[in-house]
Image (cartoon, rainbow, N blue to C red):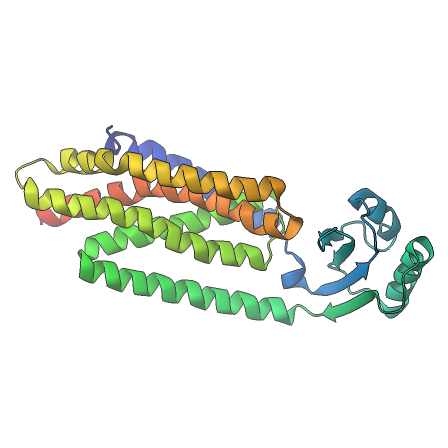
Length: 286
């Protein structure tokens, strides 16, 4: 498998996705969820399962874009999340509508309102966490392997984050705290696959000092390819199951994980290794 042969195609695909994402950012922006915009959360215990369609018929006159999550063993509790700062009159009117339909008692509902400052704080802490993780990984890989390996691995991680973000922009998927959690998870998942290949390249550098560098890289990737694909596929099956059969809150985390795992495997093969190869060739020529 000659991975280096297709590096320009791989770069082009990644750049195209990221550029489209950037275009969407400037024309439409992020579809921010309630975690970042602030809004109103209403929790109702209906004492029976009620379909999302039936619930929407009641809340559409207050917010047509509100999200609905079922909770509880029998899914008889619903959580309504609205990006709007609903007035107290609207909240009371909505609760009265459900009370008349489902006979709610006075202690069978809860309401919560919060502003966008909470989302701003989540975003700032997420950025700090990502930067700290990337710096620590760069230091570790540079010490454990060499600096070029560290730089190539970090570029691949940044690529994964940009691809995930671009796909969210292109598909207009709501961005919430689960998206931030998924990015941090993918940083750890993706770097693991990259280190496996880099470790094999390092071994081959010691064992086959006379082998051409491009042949050595392709040999290392081929030797670890089955392990990389099997690991990704088994994990992907589990996450896909969560997305298909899980509740809405689980799906919000599973979807970015699916994007991230695919991007992480792709970048390990077609981004990290070719970038290291190019850096190493340049270093040897100097």
